[in-house]
Length: 142
Image (cartoon, rainbow, N blue to C red; front, side, top):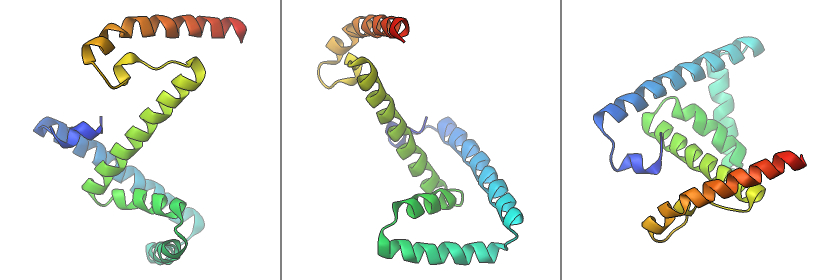
């Protein structure tokens, strides 16, 4: 879901599915933000003022943490921002998974390498066998 390819071939069903997930995200952010404000006893206008002040500060200091946090809040208000955020997060998670595979097993799936697609698909079984062998060896050692 939320892969970069979805921007090019988004069907009406997929759009509807994305919107449903977005509405759930929006409700969750609203619930969490409301609970947080109740816990620390602040009003929405105080939170808004604090976010604006922090945003101005982060622009001058280029604070990535603040930008990411505010983007997640803005995503609850705008579907396109939400979709970009989820697509980016999905790509980041895929890259982390690949880095872990390479770090742990020292191999990468041939289908994930650039080059001849038929060659990559034919090497997939060999790759899976190598990963399974390494996983078994790793369990025996650990």
